[in-house]
Image 1: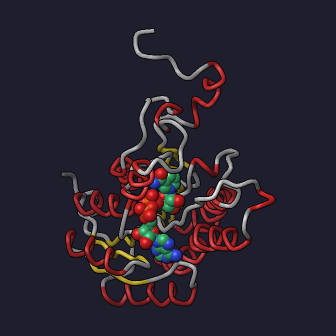
Image 2: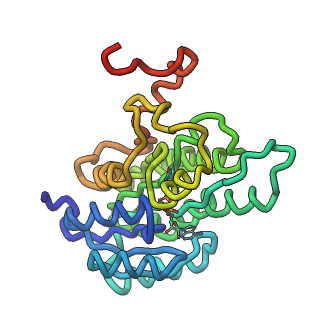
Length: 262
Ligand SMILES: NC(=O)c1ccc[n+]([C@@H]2O[C@H](COP(=O)([O-])OP(=O)(O)OC[C@H]3O[C@@H](n4cnc5c(N)ncnc54)[C@H](O)[C@@H]3O)[C@@H](O)[C@H]2O)c1
């Protein structure tokens, strides 16, 4: 396996599960050192011990704690070269907006948007001072168009815009900032909900060009690419990893994309 990490440190916030954990696996295979940060310390420790990194407990909504963790990580290892912000919380309710709860709005905006902002503030300025670094924020296809996700979608749309803002903030200081927008990705949480018959009507893969949902390592591979020097001229982009969902929305009113052999 090619050593694209070159022994550099990547911090993965939300690395205890799902896309973050799958990304940790890919990064470790490519020679990155890992700091796994999550509000679920048990899961973070499990991933860190399997892959040989260290775990930290942190809730991204607490900017003070996040800044302290950035200092601790730098003191324990070295300052990180890579930062992945994969922490996220989900909107289960798809009730009409008039009935939507303000608590849900606050929670979804705080974790999914303010959390990304806090992570950038904690880690970005140090990268800029050192003149190198790469940040990948995990947004979502839900932030690229309308859906019944009245709080989750706007939070993710704002993450895409925040990514562009930060690319301009630190680009000349040698720091690249990109977003990845997964479509429906079969992490354990999503698989469990689909098996319970909750969330989606029908098979989400039917609305994707490839006719299937996304596997977590496919998102991890994309994140690894954006963190690595192979992506040295890429900053400020939002890269969908969505099996073609965003590209083929126009096909849906014609009954879906073309079946095999038709
Ligand atoms: N799985 C999908 O279908 C999908 C699709 C689009 C976007 N995303 C985005 O990808 C990212 C990862 O999602 P996932 O599917 O891997 O979810 P997941 O639930 O499997 O993992 C999310 C991780 O974030 C941690 N986390 C949650 N809130 C936190 C907080 N306040 N502070 C610190 N850690 C916190 C959780 O403990 C968990 O380990 C999220 O930003 C999500 O919005 C996921």
